[in-house]
Length: 156
Image 1: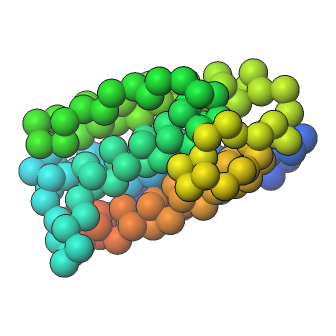
Image 2: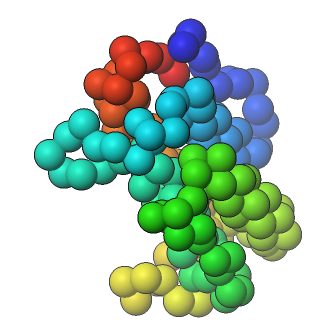
């Protein structure tokens, strides 16, 4: 996988955060795309983490923080990890991301506060987006390591 870089010419705080978030989302998807289905369900590490689990987890993180905590909406049901394919998990991620992007675009301000955060501590949308940026980047790194252990593929 060739390394890529996010666009550095985006203007506006919201647009910059969303561009960086999209870059990390795309990086994550590139890391799991093309892996053998059996390998996506198999963990090469002691923790038991799999590419399939990471894919579902990233979608859950976006939903819990933006869909449920910020917007107060019902979350989309996730596919059952024991029976879904990687394609199912990636399709779920795409649905979640579209919902998240719609919510963020409609938010009046990055200063808007989440109604119900997972830990009960107030957070504004700016913090939520930065947290998701960190969360997805961290898990993209995990996926990169898993992928390298599975078939030697690396890169952003």
